[in-house]
Image (cartoon, rainbow, N blue to C red; front, side, top):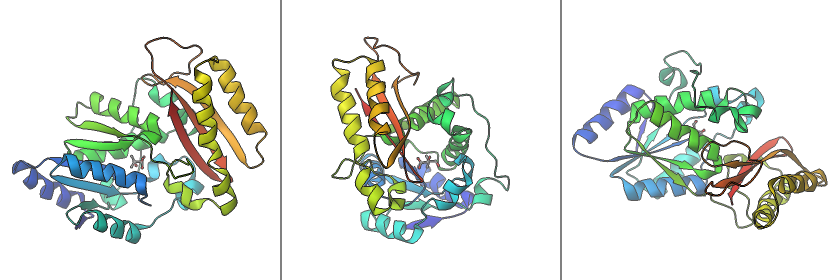
Length: 281
Ligand code: PAF
């Protein structure tokens, strides 16, 4: 397994492989790898000749310094996990100052309004940070395909928009949400849950499943009210938002328009751990 820290070294190494006709798959991560990440890496290994995994907790996408400080960092373990998966993987573990050219600042993006909905409202500047780092990573790795989980569905749509706007020739491959056996969406943040909150957290997906059932007969307003009332009664979990939006524009929906695809999007606090999930209707 090859590990790179300097962007120029990785760029040169990959350039030669590409000149030899190799197809490059790329999985950007912030580390603390779990089975959900491994599903992305496995798909990349199937689709491409070479797979690159980046591990970088990107400071510019955190609007909350405490969240950044507490984000789990398990680099040694991550390397062991990746080695077991495939020893031919390339790991990019950027040095912050190198990848940011000494200026750790987010660029400002126009994602045609996708950036102002849901996560954009609740985490100001978040998608500028994500756009900045993913654009940099794409410019260095120049992959044929890049893999993103549907758990961060808004991020996935924003990355598609980024690639279209920047005219990058990269196929974005979405991977369905990976869940624990009790339904909790896999997330690096789950590592921070106390036993009590970990036991409570599957309630989020259970509620989403109920909304999927309700989708057949109830209107949007009733479903949203149900979720708000359900969480208001929960002793531990605090609802930050539940929104129903169309998949393409991510605009909050008032009514069901036939031909549109909709999803329910939820964010819940389990103590100080912010958990995100969604479900398609
Ligand atoms: O989804 C993530 O882990 C991050 O937002 C990403 C895409 C690696 C950018 O830092």
